[in-house]
Image (cartoon, rainbow, N blue to C red):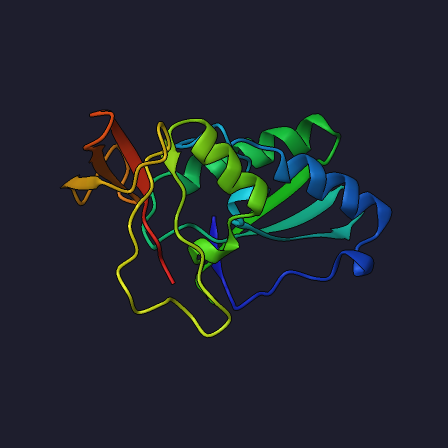
Length: 176
C-alpha cells in the first residue's frame, strides 16, 4: 500500500469501458466495518486506472488517517480485480483531498438508516450549518436522542440512545 499524491476522481466519461467495468467491481466491495454499504457508496473509492495490459492502479481514501479498515479494503479490492483476471493491482492510499461524510451517496445514507445507523447530517454548499441539529433515531424517527459515547464500534461512529423508543443506535459522525 502506497500513500499517493493528491487525486480527484475522474469524470465517468473519461473512463474506458474496461475501467468502468473494473471500477464497478471495485466499488461494489462492501465496507469491512459497515458491510451494508459499498466502497463506492461510502465515497472512499477515488479512482481506478488501467496503466498497462493486466495492470491497474486504484486510489482509495480512508474515512480518516490511520483507519484500520483500509488494509481490508485494499485486500478485498485486489481479490475482486484478481478474480476478474487483472494480474497486477496496486491500491494506493490517497489522503489529499481528505474524505468527508459529504462523499457518502444518497443510497449509502439510505442503507445506513435502513440498517439502524443514523447517517451523518448533510452540509450545504458553504459547509456545515453552524447550528446543532438533532440526530434522528433510525428506528422511530424521534429527535429526542442522547449521546452515550463519542465512540462506538468504530472511531467514525458515536453511540446514542433514543429517549422515545429507548433503543441504542450508532450515529455515523459528520466529518467535513
